[in-house]
Image (cartoon, rainbow over all chains, first blue to last red):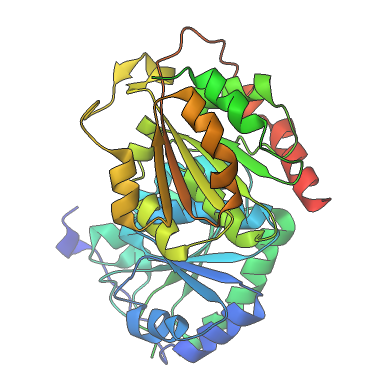
Length: 179
Length: 189
């Protein structure tokens, strides 16, 4: 099917607040944010996080490094959140497979969906690189949540707590630029 | 050039029960024979990531020294780790590389740039606080104590010979019981 033929369904949205998401990150007891910059979350999340003492920001060169760093932190009893975009997630699939899934580790990833149309479900995006993300995560058995509207922000803390409680990876897909 | 197993014995004499050691592949099998210990972190999940696991451990447990025993092929697969570790700059992070010029666990093929690239040069340019390289065992043995006594991040390139055949039972590195033993040991100490 040609990408132009894919139906898109707009959902009612009221935007996303970066401050709300950061509040949930802090409430989730995240000690470290590990990040490669992502344009979707650059201004609303990464820039304000970079100005904070806690959680501490660790800037990395490539996303799969972050999978390893989060694993080490988890072993040490500390919580990390990997803040990247979906291109980096796709580049890190072997690390997600080997470290997060096969070792059953609570690797928590917040992933900006580059070029996803606001209000459009990821699977219905016109962008191939967006449409494939959720099916790939399902094939890998990785839990994920869409964070598209302000009401979705409430999913963040339970998702992270569950990842640590039941020792599994989780991906939080940021579907639009937070304010 | 040095023998890797002899270098590892030198390192082992400096390691305390509180230290976390993160060895990779062929080095890990040698290390397990030389110094089995529950605080050996052996399961890295993907080639190249041992130093990243070690960095996470160093950041998460600043009360302990974390010693990563990397391979040259593994480090080439994750060169950005040098920049990341240098910027994060944990004072308890010690990064050793056994440079044998080969992918020893994958058939002994040469690494790209064998004999040309400078791993110490990479680390120095990345911003490691202390960088050393050794090709003579006696000199390494003389200096290792001081290197591990100074604050990290430190980088040590060990010029070693490729080793011979080795029995590689990978369940010894990342079997579920190995991972659980490490987690229990770290949580309880």
